[in-house]
Amino acid sequence: MSRERTIEEQPGRENRRKRRRFSHVRFYFINILLGVVIVAIVCIMAIYVFCTIHSVTVEGNTIYTDEQVEEYVLSDKYSNNAVYEALINTIKPKKDIPFIDKVSVRLIGYDSLRITVTEKKCVGYIPLTEGGYAYFDEDGCIVECSERVLPDVVQVTGVLLEDAQVGQQAGLEEKQLSFMVSLLKKLKKYNLPVSALAFDEQGNVTVLYGTIYISVGDSDYLEEKIMRLPHILPYLEGQTGILHLEDWTEDNTDIVFERPKE
Image 1 (cartoon, rainbow, N blue to C red):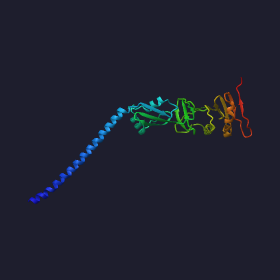
Image 2: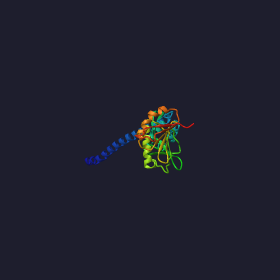
Image 3: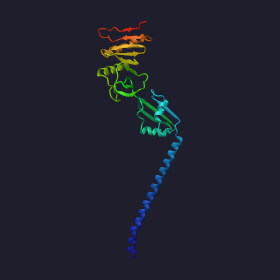
Image 4: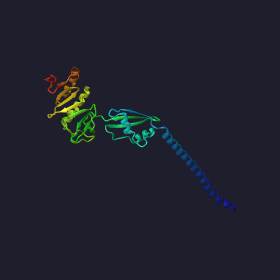
């Protein structure tokens, strides 16, 4: 009888040992989890208390002031916290800021941020029939539509756009668009900043360089015309008038500067 009881009691002992082992694992797991939660709470409280923004550096902005960039970017409920802003702008960067392609926010100290702005590359703007302007890049692709006029961007006149979709080519005639894009690239190539470009009814172009109107004419011999300007324009500095390139050909290399009549 005694031996049978011993055999019957063995499964019970094994179950109790398993329960004890399980209890130890659960005890350690709960304590580790609780420790992690406590550390996380302490860290969050420390970040909340000590990481209030005291310094913001803005880089890459020419269109907006530093204050305007901060207003656009640091616009969340907890925007006074440096760690929060760096984290949220990494996970979900600010978008749909006019003329801004990308914004990067980096933590450079527990209470300091650096905002780096990458602006859209606008080389010119064309008026829209219903008001406002369509800004395009060096390939003639629309990058922004706005009523704002940016400085140091070429104003294109003599043409109108009925519609403009960001990401699409400017809705000009193919020949006009090709001529405009090619001309602006060549002017940039020879470091000739112009402020305005005008089409006439025949599709000829005149550009404004300082106080001098340069009559380019059509797209024939465009490279040859533009490459001569760096050698001519220094002699005309401070003067006002029209520089005629429209009749230049390989057979007619005369370039005339017409001063205004007194």
